[in-house]
Amino acid sequence: MLGLAPDFWQGRSVLVTGHTGFKGGWLSLWLQKLGAQVTGYALTPPTTPSLFETACVGEAMQHHLGDLRDAAKLEQVMQAAAPEIVFHLAAQSLVRESYRDPVGTITSNVIGTMNVLEAIRRQPSVKAVVIITSDKCYQNREWLWPYREDEALGGKDPYSASKACAELITAAWRGSFLADRVAIATARAGNVIGGGDWAVDRLVPDALRAWQAGETVRIRYPDAVRPWQHVLEPLSGYLLLARRLHDGQAVGAWNFGPQESDTLSVGELLDRLASRWGQEARWHTDKSEHPHEAGMLRLDSSRARSQLGWATRFNSTQALDRVVSWHRAWLNGQDMHAFTLGQIEEFMTQGSNE
Image 1 (cartoon, rainbow, N blue to C red):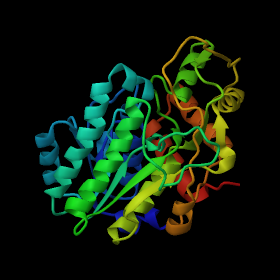
Image 2 (cartoon, rainbow, N blue to C red; image 1 turned 120 degrees about the vertical axis):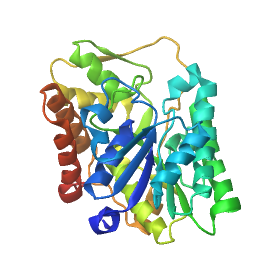
Image 3 (cartoon, rainbow, N blue to C red; image 1 turned 90 degrees about the vertical axis):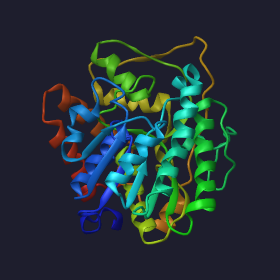
């Protein structure tokens, strides 16, 4: 895959916002492996433990702590790094947290994205930008067919609405200020799973936490359908997209989701995860009242497959195998920096969707 070629990334300056988070940590390690000069800007790791600390993400990059809403500090880091490519992942990323803190979610995800775009506007070194939003940016109509990039944006909860707003702001800044100098795209991924995710109110981390403690995990919406994929799948799409943008191509919005066979209900995914975890892993439905969450969500990634040449490599079975093996390696005290890089290497060289 052309976007993963080290000869392109070697020595290239890249800024990643959100590098202390789950997806940002994996992306930062991958960029380091490819030889990029990586600078990160983010809040402190959102959980303890965290992928950032467990896998030593910050050891081979420039690590800066800061809030997206601090526009002056963000611009200072941007100017010092002088990146050619920017990946914007930093965000409040949980639906239920957005109900608890709607104002914080909106200011982080909307004003924060605007601040990133403004810093890019004033930094002449930047040539390509990938703004990561979410599959939940679509106006969810609970229909059976997958959403395409030209579907209406919307959101019934603060998180989803904030990601739809981030899409609109990106399009406005691209059209108004940056189109002549910077190639910008937005990326909408499915529900990612992978080692090193300890977020609260996220399905796989909640399940592994409960089972590790010998408890039964409680599930809110077992019949909800989501596009599950290993974290390396969309990240490979982001890397490929950045390469195309650097060449002046691929501006616009892009979906990066799994094959249709890997769009599963919450209950189906948990059953498969439990069979791999063993040790009497169990779950049951929590029938108390909960805030609204979408029941049906599928992504159509045919544009990325046909125009970018992007392809998934791990199916849901392979993805869950790697989640469990990562978590068990951590429990056994292995070197998780080396283990995580090993899973990236495996994905690059051996992954397939057979």
